[in-house]
Length: 196
Picture (cartoon, rainbow, N blue to C red):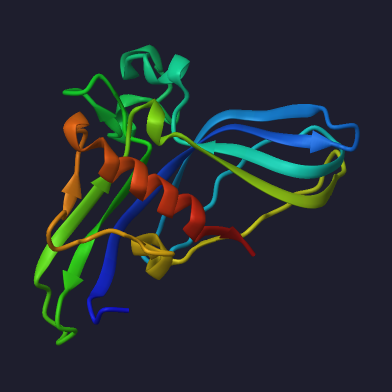
């Protein structure tokens, strides 16, 4: 709302402990970890296998839980594994994975010319967030189902006064002294993510 235009060039994030809650309140784990990479229009897809049944909610973490975050990418030998080194999401210098990766350019005076770049890559346990969607889900054994999620880019950078100053704090790459930037961005990300 302050006239600065934002253009995203990379948006990807980890979903962890993807679970469906059945009608009795029991959690059914569908997938331990998945990496969602959106294209430039904000679309992404991930395939997970879900046991047949009726569910009342979907929950997942945004980020990589501690027990996986402490592992080295070399321990995931399948190239397609969300945590393998081929994904290029491991922060060697910090000995952990990046949770949410958002890179782009900003145009301060909205004249169509980029004035700089920004890059927010969250990490550390304090940046892990939990997303919950309350909705009735019914899965048969053989059907395919899709859920659309949307990330509101405006909210990502400014939710209820929680603002990312892309000009003066244009990046966060694991510096624990400035962890507040990562936790604020993680809060904004959770608030900007909705299911359609």
